[in-house]
Image 1 (cartoon, rainbow, N blue to C red):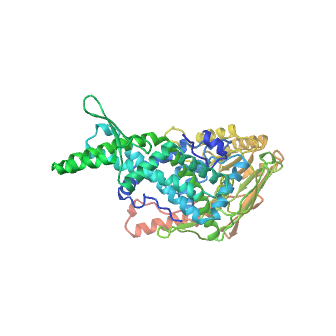
Image 2: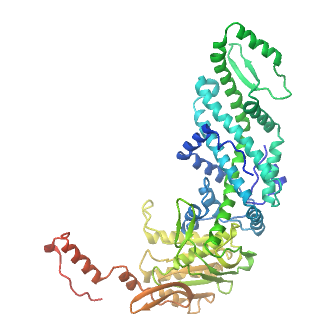
Image 3: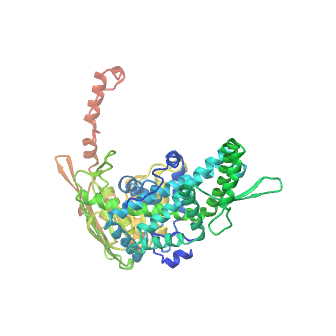
Length: 584
């Protein structure tokens, strides 16, 4: 069996072998289309992604995610921006396991460059991915029908149903391999060239030649010869397709036999019992062929995720450029340098609209760009500022630049000079863990300890509001211990906090590689105006009361709300206590 080529990780053609509108019939095959339509509503897409994830076998080190896929919103990024038809879970999985290897990133760049230069090739690969996904649905439907009994044990009508599926599988498989060979014939990237080589090698196998001939004979010549084995009980033991070069029935003898049958007035037998039996024999023969080819077919289905990975990359860049946002390819250096400089990062997941009719994504509102600079002499950044001021968005935006960049995608920034990071660790606020019967503070400590135990000097750590699960004053010492660990390890840390004492601690000399940053706001007589810009310095306060009042939570707001409800008759006035002046 020829192993599936890998478009996400570099493998030479030798390694792989060791281990125009396309005329694809899934569009016109009504029965196959009906099965696929039904399959979408069931769990066949889930099964496809399970298979894709099981087949994800990097040959270089990758990220080993703990919580960053969820914290950074990779599922939303994939769903709304990359928009794969079939492989969303796989794309989330693959992005979360970006390579820690510059040559692999450059290997992906080659493929992406070739596809961006040839829009027609992208469209053709998309058609092939559609057909491969259709084959996957057919394979699963076939397995479901064969779950309790084999074709040999089935009644003729049931066997004919399986025959229809088998015919569609084999026909679409042959078309897909031939299409891959044709579309990628002159590919100049190593990845796409390896897929072309894969298709060519498959075409040369005796198994594929046999399938191609049988499919052609059935659909075009309308003539298939079978070799039938009968056992001692006069039961059909097996039915095999007689390929070119094998002993085939003498055509003249066949015609004489048919003439003799017609001469004896046996047309009804020929039209009914013989025809039905012939269908059963065909079902046996084609089913055997599908069983024999199943391994190679499933290998080919693995290309669906890879193809959609790159279609998503092309789509992502188009979204950036069509919305007049920067789209840059990062400039990478060895992880040992530990220098990261991102200029004017744009967090595109702030405000956007996905039109359900045109399928066009529009980023609206003004995105405030922010920068990020760390190196071994300044590896700890503490960000303070008001609630809802953009601290969390800043952290997730920076994290996404690293994930997308090391995955081979363009990033939404004016420039990005990054040393490779070996993993990304995130610690964002989560609710009480009801399943494990532990509160937020225990959950915070447990999660942060797990992160710290995996960090190296080459990692990126993003911490958002550590200590929110307990009293802020009591959280200060544990938070200092977290910073202390990062300082000793040399891990790049971006930490958001409302612990303003912690920001003061950054300036006492214990952590010479730490610096304070703040989210700028304008305080106009208690009215807070955000500008979402991250600048040097510490905020000193979080403006919690001001923010709460602007959102309607105040004593005066409570008095007005109660008065309105009494006026509307929603509250019994006799039970409502009078308003009074609060002493703060």
